[in-house]
Structure formats: structure tokens, C-alpha cells
Length: 260
Ligand SMILES: [Zn+2]
Image 1 (cartoon, helix red, strand yellow):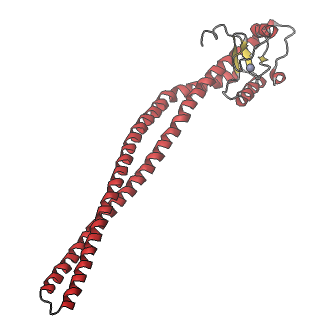
Image 2 (image 1 turned 90 degrees about the horizontal axis):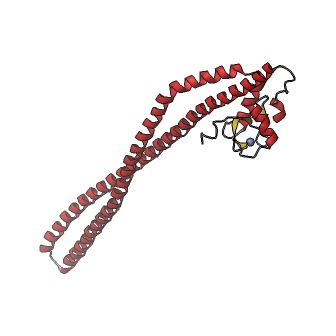
Image 3 (image 1 turned 30 degrees about the vertical axis):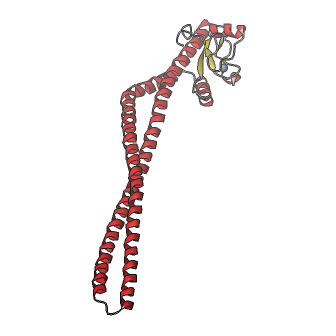
């Protein structure tokens, strides 16, 4: 990679040297502009996903709330139908009790006693079922409360994230457009070969940094130490020098150390 974009050492003409120096300066500026664009993209890149995740989660919780409310309602309907059944059975019990007063023999009396006992058990059974449904509904109500609370919390988060995202979009749209225009202008100043080299390195490295400054005698991209002779060459800025470890273009910037 180093060989692909390395400039020939100029044999004559200081003008050539100055041109190379200018290319390096343009590359350095281009990297700064492109890094800002990357930064905006990264800022946006996470938030839309977070917003989508929250929207999905809230939708899931709403479905859960609807299911739980359905369950709760179903329980209440079961209770009222059990109560209707109990009233019907109790009517029957009253009738049997009336009949028992007018029985003609013991057999009839015993038969009605058995029937009454059976019907009372039926009432007990339904009362127990009602208690069970009520207990179940209490559990459902608690789950419903939790789900509703979660929705309220997530909606709060979502509101914050949405306005944060919108804020970034509002804030960065204009600046990003300006940066893109600036990037294009800078790119047009570079010889095609140098530009292609820059773009190739940028795409091959993880953080999009193709041009880095020397920091404490080390590459600002991979932090490997640079041999003294190479440091000198970089400082001269007569040709493009790439890091022998990571392939990034190295530039000398007096102020780079201060930025940390
Ligand atoms: Zn490096």
C-alpha cells in the first residue's frame, strides 16, 4: 500500500516540493472535514436505531396490555355468568325446599334432601371458581400495571431520543451539507492518484482515518513508533509517507499534541 501512493522524490524544482506539501495540507484538511461528516453519521447512526428499538418495544408492550385487558375482561365475564348460574341454582334450591315441605313420603323427602345437597355443592363450586378467577385477575391486574408503567417509561425515553435525533438532524443538516461541499472542493484539488489512495485507505481502516498526525513520535492511527529517519522525512513534508504498520498517511502537525 505504501508503494501505491508514494510520490516520487522530486529531483529538481522546489515548486514540486511545495506542491507535495500542499497536497499533504489538503489531505490533512480533507481528513478533518470527512471525520466531521463521519462524526455526524455516527451520531445519527445510533439514534435512529434506538428510536426504532423503543418503538418496537412499546408496540410489544401495547399488545401485552391489550392481551392482559382481554384476560381481565374475560375473567369478569366469567364471574358474572357464574353469578347468574348461582342465582338460577338458588331459585331451584328454594323450589326444592318448598317441595320438601309438602312431601308425601320419606323416599321423596330423602330424594329432595340429596338434590338440595347436590345443588348447594354446585353453588359452593361456583363460589370457589369465582374466588379463583378473582385471584387470577388480581395477578393479571398487577402485570397490567407493570406493563403500563413500562410503556410510560419507554415513551418518556422515546420522546427524549426522538427530540435528540431531530435536534441532531436540524443542527447538522446545514453544516453537513457545507462539509460535503467542502470535502468535494478539497478532493478536486488533489491529483486523482493521491485522492484514490486516500479513499482506499479510508475505506480499509476501521475509524475512517486515512490521514493521521504524528503524536509523541508514533503513528496517530495505530500508535506504533516511527523510526527517527522516517520522522525527519515526515517533517520535511516533501512526499507522502504512510505508516509501515497500518498504511495511514502520516503528516506532521505541531498542534496535534495539544488537541489531546
Ligand atoms: Zn500506523
